Image 1 (spheres, rainbow, N blue to C red):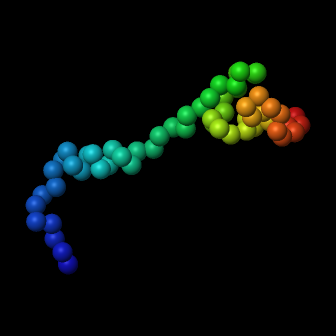
Image 2 (cartoon, rainbow, N blue to C red):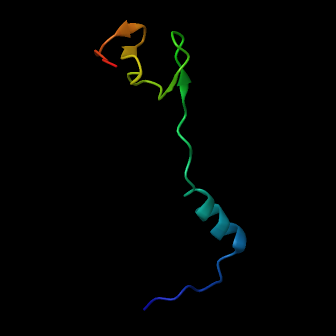
Amino acid sequence: MANPKRKQSKRRSRLRRGANRFEEPQLAKDPVDGSAFRPHRVNPNNGMYRGRQVTDVSV
């Protein structure tokens, strides 16, 4: 089995591990009702997308 020729530095290991962290999703604020939703998607609370009603949301 192959073995590394040199010890991997702490900095290199930490840089690699730092790239794998989870990121919280970015949220946009709806100008109509102020609810938070994922950008470039239909708002699940009111069914609006880019100022148009695209889905019927019954409460």
